Image 1 (cartoon, rainbow over the protein chains, first blue to last red):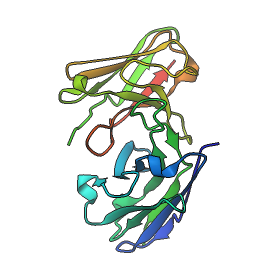
Image 2: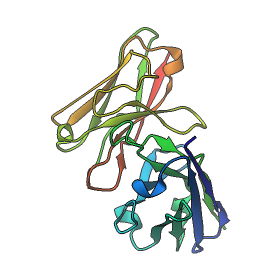
Image 3: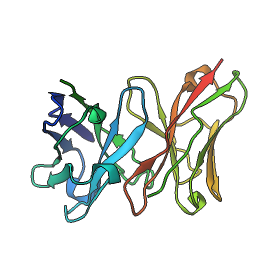
Image 4: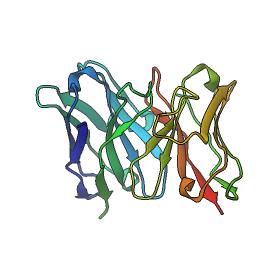
Length: 120
Length: 106
């Protein structure tokens, strides 16, 4: 069974840092681009960052460049998101996701999400 | 980067047809998918590659994409279809979602 399990969320003060992890299982992790998508409370979905299967290519949402870093460890089947200089606007549920290919380029596999709350 | 615009809300009576649009520059040249999200749940794909429907999704869901607009159509909408709907594109840039449309069926 394909599974994505996020961890590392929590409460952090403005200006702080947090590192999210996503443990993948049930598929060949290194074959797929992986994505972090976030959803602020009551708001829409926003692509945050994505990384190629071999980890050599990354793309970020323009507004987040320089503060967030996506990486992966294919040997451990784990995706990471390092978040620095956090602001209250970064408060959101962060999903680890990917497009399995069964539905073209549609993002069709989602973790349960990791909640990040930035507050003093 | 690509921006996708959706109406914030659409309201129909049960049995009516709901059309939800997604607008973006030259969107018709890109594959668009549609996701349904119910409260407290992760999104689910209802349409992919503009008009293809996953086998588990009811036939009343259909899609089209031309010019600058993609459209999700729910023919004979039911109360169970009440949800937020997001369009999504992923080609050479960061995966992009529309702002979402809240569908009300009452």
